[in-house]
Length: 210
Image (cartoon, rainbow, N blue to C red; front, side, top):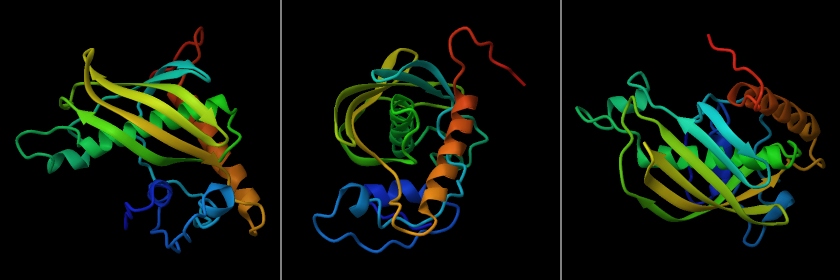
């Protein structure tokens, strides 16, 4: 899979496809739903790249707390690093984005099939997360303007902040003026709702284990 870091939206969508996505470069100045999202490939089949194990707290429109506990069985830990396995910083950031995306999806009542990482800035790492430890991610919405949202996100290990960043995310759907996109949007949203039901048990609802 080719990851093109010059376009966050393109990168984010490729993580959710099971085949390489071939995307034409965006013309300068074309953003928003019909620019950024309109040039994305029309695929709805998901690759299993989930970096959130459980959502422990959720306050729609405000804040989310999500957990990721890496284990030695995860393939990326075989090379990162030999004799000193730790969760890669880029995957810590990806987990922070995924937690933030769940917060926005629930806040908007799953109105959008896509939540794209538009910008990550002021990223600071100050510790490691090893197998057997838990990365607790807290994302807080600071501002929303149109389809864009600004969030402050922190990752903690045993209460100690090990990573923090400011993220800008953009919500949207594939445009309806392309054949089949309405069906794709519907199917993606349905799959996201199913996945959310696994990740989060509302207060008062007993979690099923095993």
